[in-house]
Image 1 (cartoon, rainbow, N blue to C red):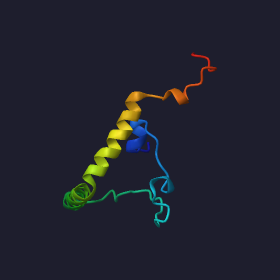
Image 2 (tube, rainbow, N blue to C red):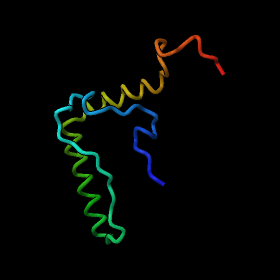
Image 3 (cartoon, one colour):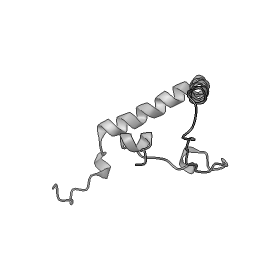
Length: 92
């Protein structure tokens, strides 16, 4: 079974690169996988590298990340805006 992304688990909208102002970024979609035969030492090394990367990203973009997560959380909690509600829809 394929694991859901964070956005899918939270039920939030995923944005295209263009919508985030990153349209000129050379990015490709990758499916991440790991070798099933890693040693515990190899897995620990990768984990520590990712943890260091998270720290660097947080130090560089922490306030922007918090702002983005707060906006997404507020959208999730607030539900659909009045503009998204169609009064002609059957309520059940």
